[in-house]
Length: 507
Image (cartoon, rainbow, N blue to C red):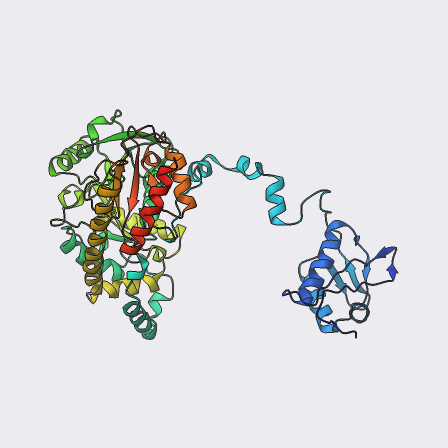
């Protein structure tokens, strides 16, 4: 057997068997890919290309081993894999033969990247209407937390790692079989019990654990509700402007979207043209993106409007935990006496986005139906994570964590506002103190090219967003940027705002 050495080398079988040569097998000694896989790749490619025709007898493992200068074990491992996948047929006593398989089309690219470049429109044309509605935008704003001034990301560095680690060890040490198997879907989990207790104190919502349904985040919750409640052609009233990603869920379900225009009090139900509205989606605590907290009068108007039409309301309580001035504002759900409101919450903004833990609060009968849907579609949700979050709330760690985040975020917002009001006074109208993670900054010059600004900001790793993104037609009456502060320290804010100024001056 010959030595492999330290540089790429090639061994091939010189003999011709049944008129077909096995020459062409290339093995590289310094490749990170094991030799048996290199041999497997080479033989498989020759079979698919037709270089090794169906019915051809493959030399014995001993012959291949000697010819290629590799161990017989390596050869046997590769051949066994090809036999298992149906490329070869091994007949005891008579040898190993190439199976007859359809030849790859001439000119067909070999690598994934080549295939994608060669046929850029192929998969675009294969998309369903649902797929097109869900993939309409290639976002310039990332969601991985890497961008400064990001308008929708918490600071993961504030996550209580030590407490989480300790609770994780304790949950695993318990060895409770109920959290390693599929969940008993009709029985409330620890997290659902703790949410029911927590939400009564923090948001004024009185509910039983049976009315709480945990989900894989707020978007998953809305997707479940769309599947459960909506048929193609149903009408959904949606905030204008509103959360584009959520709007796309309803659009992909084949629903008709009726705009519910936002004014100084939030979404106005009287602007909805249709009376036949099955569902309405609102953000009452902090309208996304306008940052408006819905006053009591508008909440009552919305509830009366929904009752008159027998319309269910989905209330996404996004940003309610981060109100920095005054006490918490009761959500729409806290006023709901008739079971019209389905409340959606999540832990993505308060803990970690990647945890993907959210919840809904809804009438008990509907909650039971929703649990059955989860059982059919997803079998179960990640119970280990739910158990840990439940313990985090039960032991009081979650509330203390929220208090700490509010103090830090409020300080960061004040710092950002000082810079915006002084160094950007010629560019932005004075922004107001807002809840949530960002400030809405209106341009003084409404002729500014928002797209060009956003592209420059993306180049400099800034996670700002343009207001027009939230409008159904991608055009806003007034141009503005959403400039985040929560995920950036004061030093990072100071550095990033200088980059932002450079982007704006270059426009």
